[in-house]
Length: 417
Ligand code: NAD
Image (cartoon, rainbow, N blue to C red; front, side, top):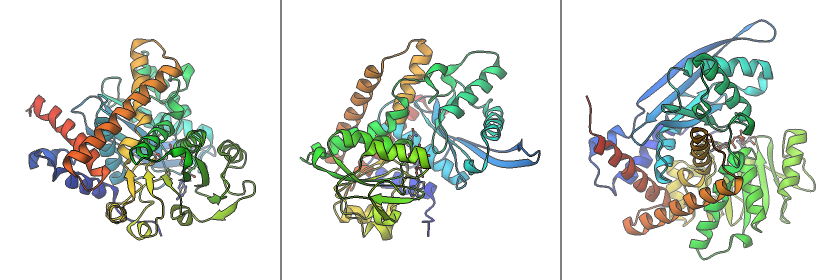
């Protein structure tokens, strides 16, 4: 059964844990726990058969103390107001921990996109963009892709916004296709930062990522790219999964061939000469590195007792519950937290936005080099925080860095009115 831990409560527990290591006033911490505003809307769209669908959608703007609100838009039947609020909070602390000048936001639409045609999804996305229009903008709030959204949806939102505003404003949204103002390296960016964070943590542990066995839960944008780039580092990806189930072979998978199989059949299941596993079996495999890259609450307290990996690098947002974190810490399983490990997506979104404002495109090499610098610096800052505070986990050490930065920006600006 799916874990029912409320992600917004998880966020509060994570902030409270870190606050204990900080001298930040309790009332400032209280401010940093809540979104500044949440848009909740019902979108009515015409389906291809002429009937109407009424769909709930949200946009949470969590904190803008360090810059414009920033965060993806998710299409999933499990989206809820609290999930969107939590994801917006995690965005705030993610941008702070990698030190890019953005606040945090998130959007979500409560649909299973597989039940809609492409034309219906376009109408729905444009209807959401109409509702978002007064809230977003190049200097205000900049959405991006997340689960079940990508370049196609970003292009629709950009076009709707620009048409209604009678302007060109490519920086209103990131994750666009290259010809619509997207950035080289953006599609790969989240997976790339997961690879970079994995390499950094293995180096720090005096181990070599090239010798590692790896399991990846979720073979979408983040998971499949992370798997491929880690494979390219010489590691052996022995198991991957998606919502259809998991596949395993001790000899290691060809990550490209699995991606091709998923493109053709819609699932990783049934690929080559592999053993089928359940998703829980994948999460408890005896591997060196486990990468959860699907959704929240994948690693629960109960499952954490069974985790056999040495290191977890979180590609998904919120895959480990706070209770699971405590179990993993007791078992000396190292967890590189989501807010750092998957920050490549928002970092290259930031580069895309900078390029849009400069009206000047960077090469893929430059994007990847700058991303490498951001993630390596952030990892070094995390370790410094971990060692100087003696925080209980790497996650708490990351929040210590992030909260300090957001709290400083807030207190420097002062309270008004
Ligand atoms: P996606 O839709 O491309 O892929 C999600 C994958 O997870 C799919 O393969 C799906 O089948 C699989 N999945 C869903 N439920 C599962 C389950 N119970 N067990 C196993 N697999 C399951 O989404 P994505 O963009 O790769 O996002 C995945 C995670 O990464 C999310 O938590 C998202 O918030 C996070 N993330 C994404 C980005 C980005 O740039 N795309 C950036 C930062 C964080």
